[in-house]
Image 1 (cartoon, one colour):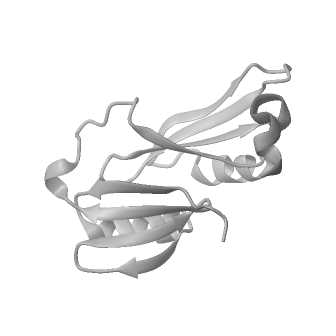
Image 2 (cartoon, helix red, strand yellow):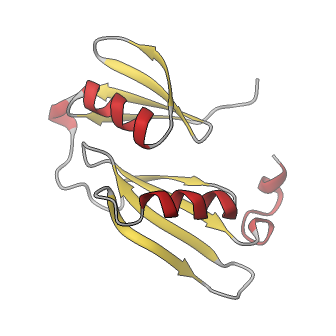
Length: 133
């Protein structure tokens, strides 16, 4: 088994969070109890903790997690969410035409947790050997 990144997030309502991650983001839901659920999302294990008291409102932009996906997949995700109520920052292209060109979009879950979806036009220029892992 290869290593899997794990992140634990507080949510205000576990049922609402599970429904959002499964239906809106396409996550597979694994282990589930009355207090948490594991969501497999973009190859990571995201544990949704039913802990309303720990939810920050508003969420500072510096507290977000990111999924870096292939460019074509990013375009598909962006097209699916453009104009949606979950978009915090719309499609943005940075460093256009350069080797480090990147696209990103910031969305939010129902508890305000921020999720950045990002792609690099030439990932090997930015991530180097990580591309082949």
